[in-house]
Every structure is written in structure tokens, then in C-alpha cells.
Amino acid sequence: MAKEWILNSAMNRFQLNFKRNVGPTSESIRQCVPKTIHLCGCG
Image 1 (cartoon, rainbow, N blue to C red):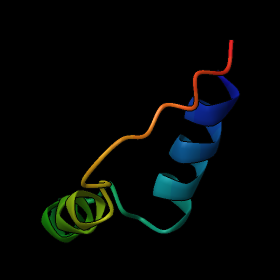
Image 2: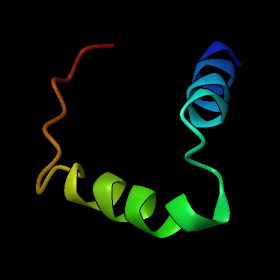
Image 3: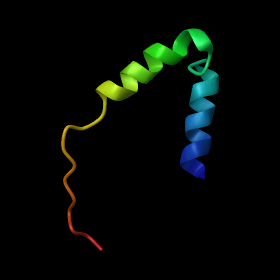
Image 4: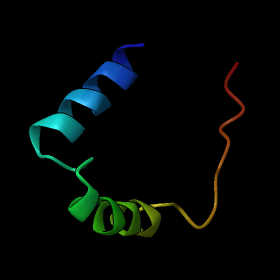
């Protein structure tokens, strides 16, 4: 829940959820996705 609150606060603060910004924001998020996921085997 805390992560969602932080994300929502940032989206609202920088107006990233406004219609004019949704496309560029989505593209930026896609560029940050890791190519591979390494699991450490912890737990």
C-alpha cells in the first residue's frame, strides 16, 4: 500500500497522469524495464 501511495503522489505531483503526459510517461517506464530478471534464491 505504501508503494502505491508514493507512486500516486509522484504521478499527481508531476502531473504525469494528465492526458498530455500519459504517452511519454508510459514510454519512459517501458525503457526502464530490465531485460532479464535474476532471482537470488533468498527465502
